Image (tube, rainbow, N blue to C red):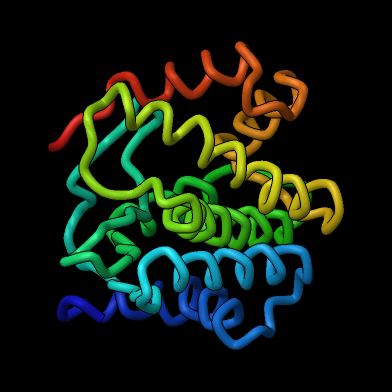
Length: 205
């Protein structure tokens, strides 16, 4: 862990995030398609950077935001080493917002929270797998996000929702809808417009 976490933050991490991410690293993820995607990404990351992926759990807010809101996960190259930062203040906020939604069954809430964490984490591994991580001008960043988000949708969101019958939070559900509407094609003009709209207001905060 990168910082000294408060009791509440540590509780969130131990109860929600750590079991999911540990499952991927130990090969015990209950969703074999997600496990396969992570294993492939981990191999590509090792080949791309000659270093293992490192995880930082952060007690401070995410230093950037996009049009859809502040992210709970971020990728960073630290002296050439691939790192994923998990921002617990944002993760807690998102979990509370999901819990506030009225659903037919309590297990749907738990499914949305687990999917949110898995999708966010896998998206950052997709950045490194495609060697599309680090500081870059906004124009190139949007091109990166078009490709990386397509990979995340096809390899993580689609299997979770279509094959594993997991529930998606509103943001991830909209992302899935736009991917389907774009013909599941990274070169689709509809997909390009969707991602451009998401990231065109990217800014440091």
